[in-house]
Structure formats: structure tokens, C-alpha cells
Length: 228
Image (cartoon, rainbow, N blue to C red; front, side):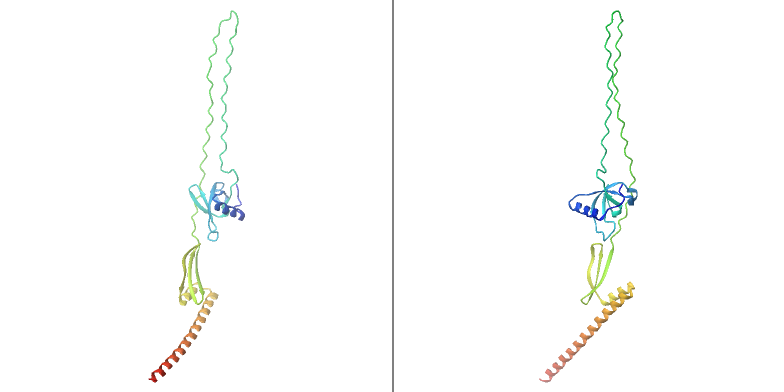
């Protein structure tokens, strides 16, 4: 019984076999508990970054995820039934004795010939049912929520495993600051406050510039009105 689990090269070999349409046979190791020593077929390799149990094995009618330590490559010839034992040949009956030709000897009736009995081969015992390991509950993939800042905008995105739950959408700076406050990490909160201070200063400069341009336009408009 293999007990070392799958190596990196063996996992790569299984990945190539699945791509070619084959389902490699594996044997459960001691790490698999009561299923140790039993055989299964790898039907899929999921994302190792999402869960350490990314080797999906078909066992009977179930397809369950396991870690590389739970299974190993099955040895050649594993799972094949041994050849049927040869049946004993029936014993040959003894040859009937030849009659003796003796003068003045009373005839003795020939012994009754008995039919040979053919011994029946013993019935093969049925294999005992092995205990099946309780199926491990499949843990859901990890959830990642990302708050990002780029080109003057704050965005939030959510992803579970390899599936995107929410594409990046824009949030207000005040909402971004409240999200960071929930994390309670001083370095992160200071960085957000610096970004907001820089945006505030830039917005004030733009407002001052627009006020100056508006004042010039209003002065020009007053001159045009006086020229009537």
C-alpha cells in the first residue's frame, strides 16, 4: 500500500492524462482513513490555490475531493481479479477384472460397476464488504473582497475561488474610508487618509481656478452690458 501521496511530477502526469481523455487509477493512502488501500479514478484536478483538496476522485458512485497526501498512483495490475482456480479432474474408475478361464470352477458373477462420483469444487467465498469512509464535506472556496484605488477612483470587487461575484464598481471616498476603518490597520488607514487629503487639495485648487475664470467671465459680461 502506497503511503507517500502524490508528488509534483505525478500530479503533472495526472493532469496530462486527463487532458488526453484518460482517468488515472489511484490508491488511497493511510491519510485517507478507513478508505486506505482501496482504489479510485481521478476525474478532475481543480484549482490548488482555491483548496488543498483539489484531486477529485471517483469512488463507486461518488466523486469527492481529496488532497495529494490522501492518494497515490495505483501499482500496475491492482484491482484485477485472480485467475480462477483449476477444477480437480474426476477420478478414473478402476478397470473391470477380466474373467478367469479355469476348468471345473464355478462361475462367479462379475462385480457391479459403480459410476464414479465427480467431486464438486468448493464455492469461492464472497469478499466481505469493506467499510466506506464517510464522505468529507466539501468546503466552499475562499472569498476575496478587494478595495482598490486607481486614477482618482475607489473601486470594490468580490471573488469566490475563480468565480467573480462582483466586478469592480466605483464607491465614494467616504465609503472607502469607512471600509478601511473596519480593518483597524493603522498603516492602511493612514495611507487612505493621505490619498483623500491629496484629492481634497487638488479639488480645492480646481475650485479656485474655476472661481477665477468665472470672475473673469462675469467681468467681461458686465463690460458688454455697459457697451449698449
